[in-house]
Length: 236
Image (cartoon, rainbow, N blue to C red; front, side, top):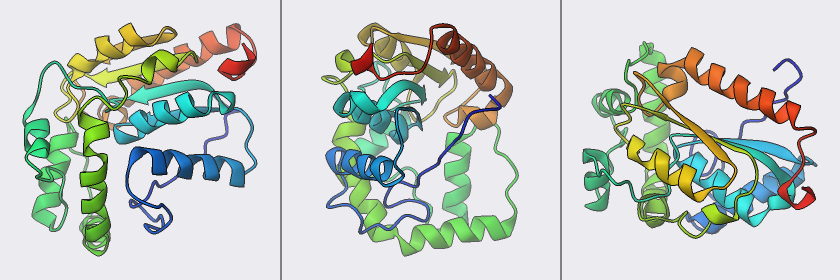
């Protein structure tokens, strides 16, 4: 995709974002943050790519602002009650944080959870990630509590039927965070969705199986190009 322009955003309170830039850590506040980000950069109609929590928020944003979104790519998206409840979800429902990274040991445990094949990470990178998580612990814990119902208890149930933009949904077949049994639910409830189960991949499937993920995205983009210019669902 040589002419594609990618813009990545750190959603509060993660990465380098300002954790005080949202009113509270829930889906409506983060959707408003994404909308402000879109307007601040004077973007027109865009494709939105999201993984995990970002996938659920991409759907919510597209439902609320269909005029700004022409297509969606969702990688292991949260937002539905999985037919198969895994250990991660059971722990999260008990108010535990299964992806805490307050120490190198916890970081290693988190990486083993989200990757099928854990990529090598130099110790300075690990220390940076842990220090960042420690500094933002208060905000991250608030986000975990505030977003839990939306992410794990069907926050997308009433939104998927409003998504008419072409959508690609990919899940790793060994996802230990959001079970791949969610894939058929996304495809059944979104009229313009297609999807694929990526073999031998975990939650961060674009790292576990980059070639398979890229192949699926390229096929999706080719189909979009064949169908004409990327326009919002309100312009179809």
